[in-house]
Image (cartoon, rainbow, N blue to C red; front, top):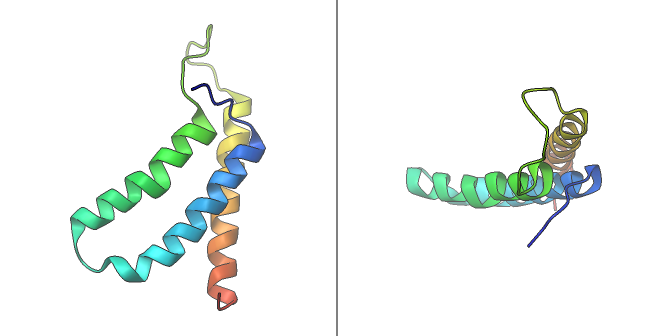
Length: 91
C-alpha cells in the first residue's frame, strides 16, 4: 500500500497521537511493556506512515527535505495542541 504523506496526513496523525496518548496515559500504569507497545502503536507507526511515508525517494542523499520538515512540524504541533486541549477541556 502506497501512502503519500502530506502536511494534512501528518496533522491528522498528530491529532490521533495526542488523543490516544491522552486517553492511554493514566491507564497504562507502571508496566514498561505496555508503555513500549503503546508508543510503537500510537506514536511510531502513525508517525512513520503519515509523516515520513513508506519507500525511498530517489535522489535524496543527505539533503534537508523541506517537505518532511513541514510534515514533522505539523505532526508535532497537532499532537501538542490536542494534548493541551484535552488537559484544558474535560473530554
